[in-house]
Length: 68
Image (cartoon, rainbow, N blue to C red):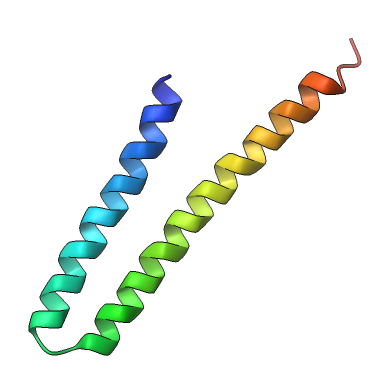
C-alpha cells in the first residue's frame, strides 16, 4: 500500500511543479517554452508509469513461472 501512495505522490508532485512552471512561463509570454515544459513533464510521468508497469509484469512473470 505504501508503494501505491508513493507513485501517486510522485506523479502529483511532477504535475504540480509542471503546472506552476507552465503558468509562470505563459504569463511571461513564452508559450513555446511552456509547452515544452508540459511535454517534458508528461514524458517524465510516462517513464515513471512504464517503470512501474515493467515491475508489475516482472512480478506477474515470477508468480506464474515459479520454478520452486
